[in-house]
Length: 79
Image (cartoon, rainbow, N blue to C red; front, side, top):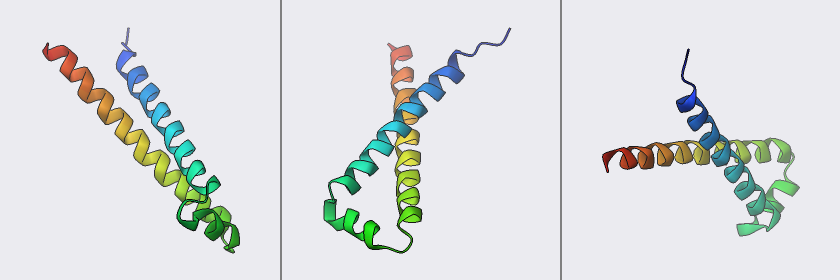
């Protein structure tokens, strides 16, 4: 039987990072940090700009979350 612990470990941490990245990007727009909310609201392609922003943050945070989790998992084994 296949052991799914590693797959579950990676998917769980990726989803946590994706949710965190999505929340951060929405918070940046919602709080209008550096005029980002106004810029997206006034743009003809605001929906596309928002999707690209959310996708970029979600992807970056997801990868960082998985990398950090794997790094700390390796540290636990060394001890």
